[in-house]
Length: 125
Image (cartoon, rainbow, N blue to C red; front, side, top):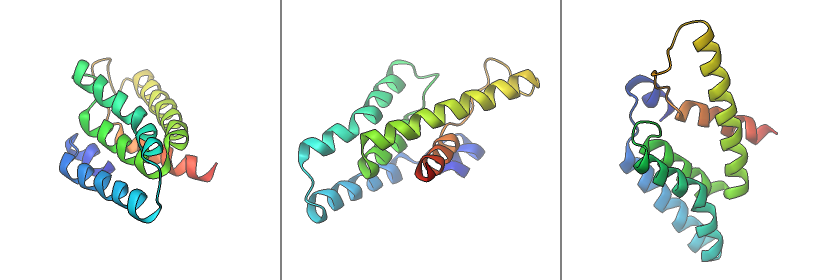
């Protein structure tokens, strides 16, 4: 998805929804997780999805769906770690590109690649 986000600036929402449903099934049927815990893990992604609806030019719905999936797999605490790393990394790269005059203030950067790096980096921390 990160490659597709870089190339086309688009995420397939159907794939995200299927992955979210599969993770729910695994957590409910196999892991026997409590329903409250699953709902708690969705909060950061759902908040990002609401923000994507309120500000359609800044946050993509696909980014929010990927974040919901990550939360449904790893839980909200790890999800927040990954999100903080991703936002910091995206800001740093955007600042470097802006200083080098490769982008301007209106340039939209894909976020899923930063989220992917955040998940990888957070997994090693």
